Length: 508
Image (cartoon, rainbow, N blue to C red):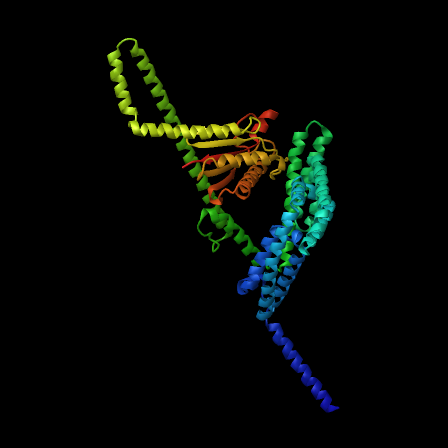
């Protein structure tokens, strides 16, 4: 009996020592895992990229398998089990290769269904009819699984039902008013747990929708005022949902407060990348934000200086034209009095202004060719599509024929003919640089219009790159919101003309 008791106590002591040893071995954070295990980091980045391209819908089986590999790799890495972590990550990366191939096959076979889905989402169907569009997305996922398994004909048979379903949701969404959109956005945000994770932003959204409803209750004709508050409510509701999803993502990844700050700094670094240089994260946060703000302000000042120089150049050109006209008038006056004096003045005029005969002919020929190209572009567009302007060697296409849904930036199928004309016009000028500038009317608040103009310009630029084959380093896009109207915002026609995307073809 004493021997058994002694053995029991000895075993208990060994167990306590083992447990104590395990307790001292701390588990790695998510950020530490990614920095120490390159294969795991690569797998997570590959899956994030695939997810951004809807791979979860287009190749659900491969996506699930790759995600499971990532979970196993992270679990092993967190416990410092390098061999298991690297093996799982390697398996996952092989699965990602298949995932990308399967997703591409689904994109090709289900292209019309995906286009119908994109239009439905752009119209706001996810916000207004989340359950129905979720059910359709589940059907799309099942259809994609058929493609993964090689059942192509069965997938094609399911395709018309998907197209019809998404098109029906798109039509239903377009028929709903802005207030209904905002209410649906608030309801959707609550489903995303915004009440718990983003209560302040959600409260602001509910306050704005309350103002919109009060305005309509008091006077049904005040739809413009109500729409301003409803749009703001929708934006705030969507923001609260986005905040909630971000916080939940942090929670799922077991982010520490330090991880959150590092993530925030990484986002600021991405914003700062086009400006160049390294942000001073070794200083207080206020200094970082102030430095970024000053860099942007400097760029704006440089742009204003360039605009002033351009205006001065235009003014100088007008003065030269006025001087030339005055000289012509003087020559005309002298022609009636003294032919010899006229010949002398003409000789002086030609000596001062004319180029050599060879250079002059080359300049005339070049100008003639540029004019022919410009007239070709001008003839391609109807007056309801765009206004075409020649700016020296450059050409400006002010396209007001886009039919963007209210508050949206997605390019509709109806706009594809206009986009194809723009692509054709650009290709008349090989090696040109393309500037895409978005503009809105004055409806809505300044910040919303600024973001909307930027988003529309980016979508058009993306279409030119991906569909038109225009080199990425030849295209830039910017948004100017409502700051550069070309017509009065007091009339319907004027606002329609101000809602435009300008494509400037810059020739070297």
